[in-house]
Length: 124
Image (cartoon, rainbow, N blue to C red):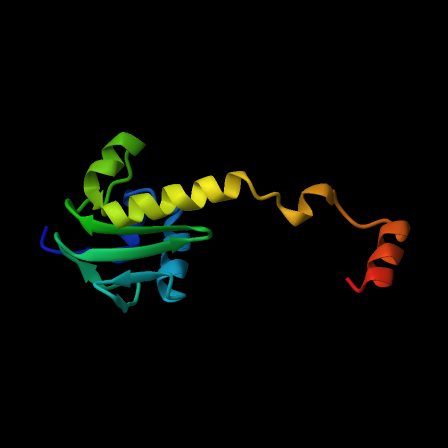
């Protein structure tokens, strides 16, 4: 196999749950191949560098193996190698999120009439 679609590889490597989500991410510019945005149908090769952004998580990986079959997570991790900078950045982001409380954590569902009045009083 000389090349494989980037969206198919991202799905097989378990960066995205479905292939359509992987395709949408590539189309939306969340995935860069060798530093450039691309289309979902672009072929990637062994040795290509991918910058992947999936919600709050970011990876920088090098492609080691091409596979179009989605397998278990331990096998999927063998398809790529993550850079040390990427690993340290993800760890730093995870530890910083541990100590920051989400502002919406106290809000459960739709605001009540009282909550809305308080929001209006304090300028939302």
